[in-house]
Image 1 (spheres, one colour):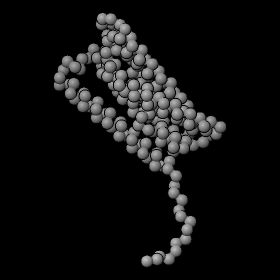
Image 2 (tube, rainbow, N blue to C red):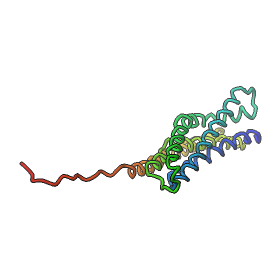
Image 3 (cartoon, rainbow, N blue to C red):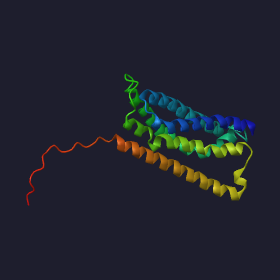
Length: 199
């Protein structure tokens, strides 16, 4: 059990750190700090994907009940969110990092609402945080607690996990919409003078 937990802990820690960094990106008001944190997030996301793929791949090639095989079995729940993070989040984080880099010549520039809206997009933080959440059952099982053995615990645990995912998604969507509305250009009032109404 200890060796299995040793394999899973770094994976869960990287995904948790990525989720925390992603959650704080829209609050950054300085472009230089936004670029720096986005760079950290890109490294964490790529590391999380690599570690998850390494554990899952090791489980495919291992035989018997080895620690790697048990760790891979525990991470099957996190494979889906990790795939979404690979396809969607990493690409958006890289684009956000490049967009913040456009202000490198003026590092004291406040972060535009457009960049903060991109940082608050649900596909940036949600897959990372859901993947971190999906590693929790594997950690609990590796610690010695078998939730699947008690039918009275499995149902509520699944319900709580699903509600947590929905709550995280709604929070990201609301925050993204708020920043996106601020990023829209204000419509210029018409310069035409009001004329007489013709019937």
